[in-house]
Each structure stands twice: as C-alpha cells, then as structure tokens.
Image (cartoon, rainbow over all chains, first blue to last red; front, side, top):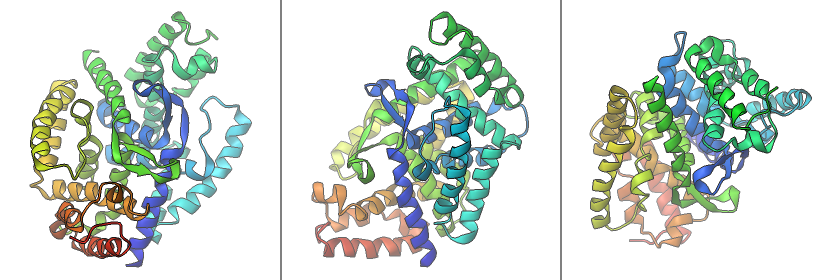
Length: 197
Length: 197
C-alpha cells in the first residue's frame, strides 16, 4: 500500500498548519492568535454559508477544497501579514511555489498534481471559483475585526483604503457583500478602528 | 439584508469552536491540546485524500460538509472524550440535539434546516456518506496517536478493543483502511501504547 503510506505522510505533515499563527485573534479564547488550520476551517464554512451571494456560476465544492488547502504552503513558507509591504509579497510567492511542490508532492502522483493545480488556480485568481474563494478568505478577517473592536487593524494602524483594496475581489464576485464591506469600513473609520486614508 | 445578518451571526458564533479543546494533542506545537475547529479542518482533508478507499458510492462533497459542521454542536454541548462511559454518551446526545437546534437555527430557515439535517444524518450514521464521514473522524486520532507515541491512548489507559470498536465503521465503509487499522493497533499493543484487552 505505497499510495496509502504517501497519503498518511501528507495527512500527518499538514498537522503543522495548526502551529502557524496569524495576526487575527480568537476573541473567545483570551484573544490568542488564530492558527491557519482553524482559519481554513472557518473560511470553508464562510464560503458554504455565503455562496448565494456569488455573482457568477461557481462550483462550491471546488471553492471549499481550494479554501481547505490554500494555506498548507505556509507550513514551509510561513504566514505573511496581509498588509505587509509589496516586496515581501514577491519573495513570499517564490517560497510558496516551492512549498506547494514539496507538500502536494508528498501525495501519490495524480492526486498531488490535482491539489497543486487547484492551489495554483486559487493563487492566480482568474477563474470565478478562485475569485470567490479569495473573496471569502479576505472578508472573514473583516467580520472578525469588526466583532473585536478593530482587532489586527488597530494593532497595525491599517488604513481604510488598504482594507477596501484587499476586499476588491468582491466587487465582481459578490457585489452585495462588497456593499456590506463598504458600509462596515465606514463604520470602522467612525469608531477609530481604521485610519481614514 | 436580514438573511446576511443571520448568516454573519452564525459565522461569528462558530468562532467559539476554536476554544473547544479535545484529548488529542498537536505534537508540533508543544503537544498542546487540539481544538475542534482545526480538527474539523483536518478530517475534511482526511476524507478528501482517502476517498478512493470508500467501499460504497459516496458524495465526497456531502461528506466534507458533514465533517466541517459535525462538531459545531460542541459550542453548546462541549466535547466528550471518545472513550467516556456510555451513560455520559446518552446525556450528551440530548445536549447535542438542543445545540443543533439553537446553532443551525441561527441561519435563515431553509439553510439552517439543511445543515441540521446533514448533522442528524451524520449522527445517525445510516447512510454511506455518514458512515464514511464517521469512519474518517475516528481514524484520524489513530494516525495522530501512532505518530505521537500513543498520545491520548497512553494518557487514559485505553484498550485495544476500545479502539477497534470505535473504528468499526471502517469494516463496511472502507475495508482496506480497516485492515490498516488492525495492523496499527497490534503495533500499538506491541509498543505498550494500548492495553491488550
């Protein structure tokens, strides 16, 4: 059962995603930092629950799997804060591609290739599925920060325009949610949680 | 947008699953206890990766969603250790049904009903989808304990027959994995990680 051994190796190695910590915090758990595994669970359900707002035809099952695997590359490449400067993002991309090769490469040939392709599709964000998935990944921290008195926005002095830019996938992929995000961002500025710039 | 408000309320309340801790530990993160949110992410991927071993026709997308939502009821009902005595399991069932009513009831009518039905299907474990989902939920701690020198088995003096009984859904839903489990359990006894009874 060589295939099974490879699959178990992959499934055990991805346990490490539970030790990759993000900037967002879990309010109900003493505001400890959130890890990327529980975050991945959460956004998969965000996509399931909010799928009706997708403007284009999406395959929610592909979107869900994309979201479940999209952060696995952080096991090798680490998590980069969403609002880090752009030259950090470029270096990160190279690390992430190598991570995808190694980690999805643990799986038997075709299975690993399929997962890697799905991850690349997510990263490139050109298909309707990937754009909706990206939008879900990015809207969740907004919900969390709004429920947590500004959360990581306040801690890092984030500007309104940064949050709007980060959520701009919504303009095409889920316009009703984009409208909601715009309202929330205005409210966050009013509350002093985002800088008005 | 009353529906959206209800959906956001649900999505924010389920954040609490990140504060429900289980008996299994995360070896790579100083052996801290695992929480039910990251566990749910992990088993959804276990099901995706091991779907080829399903003996019957399963709908992997339903299985995945079942696994993503199956522990949400712990937010109200708490997590019960798999090997707790049976009268604890009976009391737990009543608490869990009330939790399902409240939590899935946060969602707009039809959406909440669909999720609740899916959770009930998982609990009743009569369909091929639910039996495969249950089997995946139960096989993961075995992988984790085998990779962690017996983990929660050692800590709680668990017997071989308890682990076999807990994994018995595999006999019908994934016989090849059942064979693997039997081999691993024998190895665990040999290593002194499970009691030979």
